[in-house]
Length: 375
Image (tube, rainbow, N blue to C red; front, side, top):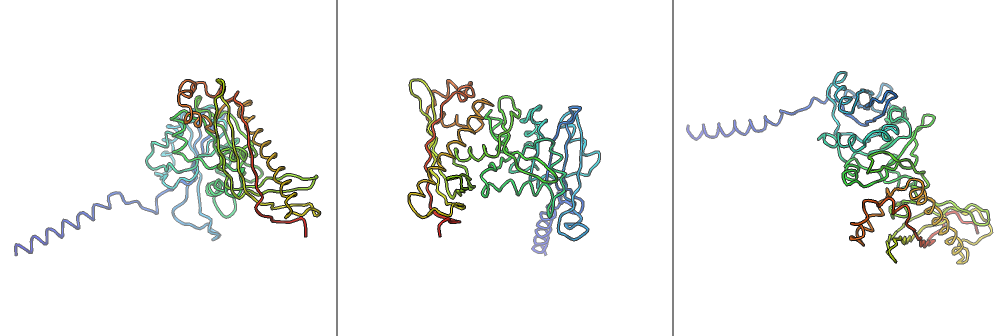
């Protein structure tokens, strides 16, 4: 009998352990999941917060197309904390574990402390540090509210942001956690930028974040983004259009490596940048040339090498002369090779960077041919 009571008590104890696991259960029929978030500055200087929320009741729209139903929840406050708090006045508790994109409008990024905006959400345990941070030219609300085909706006923005493997003009995505790390370290950096036009969401270069001022400094073009990706060896693909004898030619990058080597000579700093690219001629509109011949192949390589160097010089001139800021962390190469020099000059690095000479050594190889001119 005593042995039976012991077993009974043990059984009850085990059952209680499993029952306690239900204390934080969430009713999936009542949960609001945030897919996208946008922040803007209004004309009255207040902060507008926009959530794109997936409705939990149904994963289909009324027409059965498979597009999730969503609602837009907007809130306004004198500061971000008030805007977030005011959401509770009109919506049940929302969950941010599924947040994919974090959009910041142009005016807000120029006038408000970006570190403060990002860190507010970093401190929220529910927000994923892997969410993508993206700048918008104009209002972020225009993008998050944009009606798109087959999917919701935040999902389309998220999917396109990863297309850098297909197009070198798309910057590698910036995650929320990484952006916070750069801002904490007072390191300037680039963030993907997009714009809306006639019902479309279009990726359009990158924004420069000035870590000292914690503000948006300005934008660079998609072409300059591609050139910077070459320089840093971070390109995963893309094409380079050019011409030979006024005939269109397109070189497609298959692989690319870069080496950045800072040098100090007679007290002056310079950079030597070595680029090695392999690719194929994907288009050649000159029917009289033998694409397989070595002379023509060498001619193509020389043309593409000059084109890449010209484009990289243009991109770096934009950063050095127009914005006078290093958002691509060339200073890290100086820090690694010349730690003493860096220690003495890091406080005025942007000024030094804007005056530093850069030498380019580009080596292009044609490994294959797509559309050939000679038959």
